[in-house]
Length: 198
Image 1 (tube, one colour):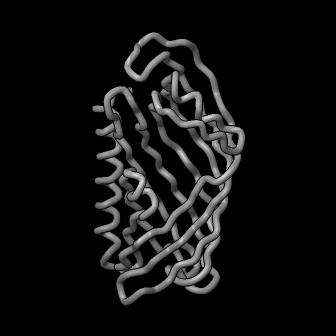
Image 2: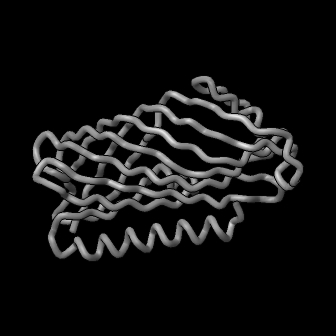
Image 3: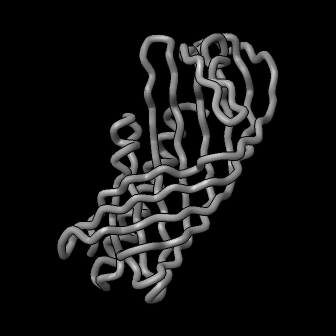
């Protein structure tokens, strides 16, 4: 997939998310947010959470990274919708969630010897992997009210991701070496969100 097509898809998603947020803002039942951890890792993201019932919300977040320097690539987009159940009231205190994950990636020429939960990231040094992944997981979090409109939220999730990919010999080469798949089980969400509640 070309970067232009990817950028168009992400742009349409975020525009729809913003329009939905603006329409719901009048009802005092929505929050816009950003994950500070992803922002620090140079993966811009945005999220929208809407209240469905006093103890139920629907949270959707998206992340886009078009990082590419010289021959190094770390490009991806991820969308993660989540249904949340709050133990007290929505947007405050403890919550549990069930989330889905979907996205595409283009990674390569990254010198990294990390091996984590069955995933060998050292393979990114000599190869480029382009593909997609889907998955699901469960999460737990807590939301602190800072003032009338600002909250701080922490969440951790665990789950499964299935990825399919094509492998290439270098970050800019077009000759495909082969295809494969990978199943991952482990952390699927780590978030420290700064949110504005409407």
